[in-house]
Amino acid sequence: MDHMLLLVAAGFAAGAMNALAGGGSFVTLPALIAAGVPSVAANASSTVALYPGGAASAWVYRDSLGVICGIPVRPALVATLVGGLIGALLLLWTPTRLFDQVLPWLLLAATAALAFGRTAGPFVRARFSAGLRTVLSIQFLLGVYGGYFGGAVGLMMVAAWSLLSAANVKALNAPRTLMVTAANTIAVLCFVLAGAVRWPQALLVGLGALAGGFGGAWLGRRLPPTAVRTGTLVVAVAITAAFFVRAYR
Image (cartoon, helix red, strand yellow):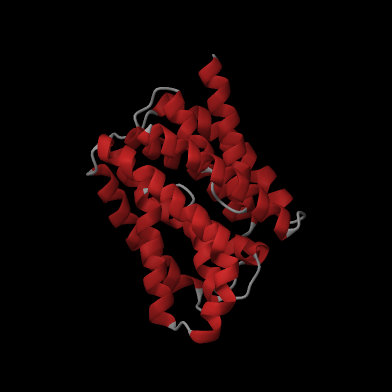
């Protein structure tokens, strides 16, 4: 019963976080592992569980889609889908023990990108102009990351786009939710077909995430960007530190 409540609550929090700025897997992944699910299966189950909530958020934001760093959405979507497929297959081929060692570093990369992306953005934009190939290449790599790990891929997208565009976090919410959902669509299909999902735990997380996705998207239209970013960063730092302790204690 304790694990059931933990997973539903983690799903709700993660769904809201994904709708606001991303990073929901920072909550669901440790919750699933705490419930006894091995890390690779936990990551696959987390991706599947959060998928409906992410799709719900994408639907809420459907009227707000625009360009990404000056690039139309459709080619970026294709690049994300292809990258998501490759990343999902890589995860399925990764041994659990190796993934346990890699996981904290993936979390650290996402946290660092969120923390320093805004500061580095003006510096990069003043010296570098991103064209179609550059943006699509970055989006492909983000798709690989999303399909492989899933955790904080929304944060990674916002951080990368912030380096190339001056748009604020709230303006990037709509394309971010679409691209994350796209990468997760391919990953979910791969994980389900491979039998990598722990369905009882994933369903509990998914129920919470579905409610959290709607609530978070509603809040995302009303909260100031600074509050969204700060709250997400605090959660990211805490969970990253916890996973380093878990992997290397």
